[in-house]
Amino acid sequence: MRALVLVVVGAGLGACAELNPEFLGPASASGSSMSTTGDASSSATQSQGSMSGSTGDSMGGSTTGVTTCDDPAQVVCDGGCVDTQLNVLHCGGCNQPCAMTQICFEGACVLNCPVDDPVACGLVCSDPENDPANCGQCGAPCAIGQFCVAGACADACPADVTPCGNLCVDTDTDHDHCGGCDQPCGDLQVCAGGSCVDGCGGGLEICGNTCVDTQRDEMHCGGCTGKCGAGEICELGSCISECPADQSECPADCADLQNDPDNCGACNHHCFATQSCVAGECVCSGSKLACGNTCVDTDKSELHCGGCNMPCPAMAQCTSGSCGCVGNLMQCGDSCVNTNNDEAHCGGCDMPCDGTCNGGNCID
Image 1 (cartoon, helix red, strand yellow):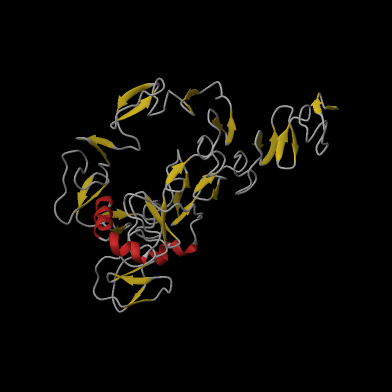
Image 2: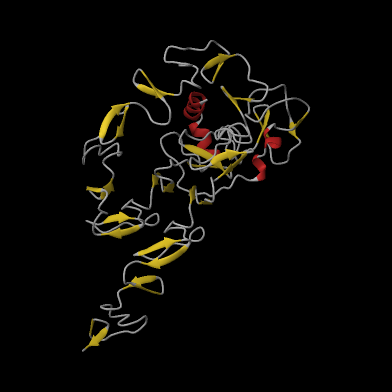
């Protein structure tokens, strides 16, 4: 399925850019940070593409002359009924595929950021908890020489991590700083215990000079040398000519529409990387809440404390969904301040001092 999407993207770049302003092609992506909780439009019932006049499927493949769809949320694309609000091959309109690093949400191709960098900031994925270029929120850089710690700019890294450049990193697991700063692992290696070892992340296997999913890759099905024949698909490491009865046939893949995050509720409806597919809907695990394009624990997140987009002030921590200033600082308005030496809050909030504030006392 991945190879099919990439080929279509390259072939239709000009038309896609004209029809779908959010489609930017395989080398870039939309900068929108979109939120989703897996709405009812992605249900398994709709995913089957209810149509008048013929049979078809939700992937937009060739059928036998479908002209109308019974579901008003769907349109006919390439002879099949699809939801252009969710389908990565027909995002915002027919034949407007998203790039491989994107998903389709509300008819726009948006970045599908990984768990390690879950927030889309412009054209890049970022973790505002520790990104000095987007500290606390997108477009909020720290000063030169500062680090981003728990979403706030700080002058030093915590004791359990290592300063490397302007980043605080765990050299036991960091791919670019494995065992020490500026000691990157190779493309086909992972960092474990501070050492680079051969392997791929995400359960992939090394085949030649790339990492592949031997459970689903038709060119490496069941192993690096396993190649499926024409018309066959790779399912759980075996080449088969048709999908099992409990799965739907999606482009070059069989999918359980109830549980597959790449085909959740419908073919080519991808969940965000931080979500799971449950009963045909994209949801966050446990008590986490979908805020923007990531799942967060609002009991602990300084960016979403107690709810989405409810950031704590600088030098504050989120505990049980409430912000509290660290140390002996006091919250005055939207800031945590030291009332012992703050001229605007000398001895207490909103107690300005025209002279010097020392020990909470104003000295002329």
